[in-house]
Length: 241
Image (cartoon, rainbow, N blue to C red; front, side, top):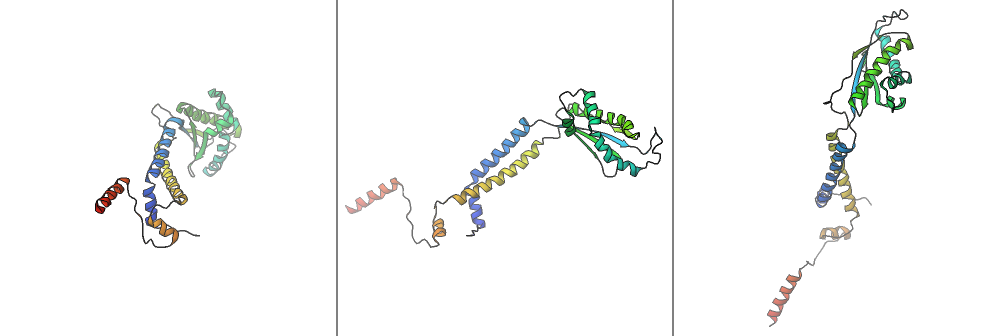
């Protein structure tokens, strides 16, 4: 049986479950804030930019290397940068004894903007100085090793990564997390409110009876407190005398 709910019933349910909705929304929001500020480790990001040059200065094997060719090489360079041939040397140079090639690979992201010849090596780590060192070391080693790996020398360092005590972490973003949690908590609490209302079969008003029986209510017995009942009883006795 298909049931519909009017706009009036919708707002009546919200008003009836207002305390529940407010409590759940507040709880989820507060929980998100506590987790974001105190339990999630801040992650810092540092980037080094490489410039893929057109001119090859050390070899004559690719004298006609043009920009389009360099752009095609960027994808190859991106794979080489994250390969064990480069990352193993980075681990050795920085003495990252607790880090494997796979774990270091996950910290590094390589990309280029559109058709530009600039490749950006971005590193994320819980320590901003380690992120900076990994980004710069990866760029330096790649620039050095690419000469032997591909027998060309067309990579230059455009901008080195930097770090400072005042650097802000890129994640988590507590304010964003709190805002998202507030919306999610509000929606969840509304859903729970309507679920409880749907499961609640108690009759609390004349309207509930009319809705259940599909019959009009022709009379009702009002509740009366004991104090009022005693007062009426005394009045009846006085009238009988």
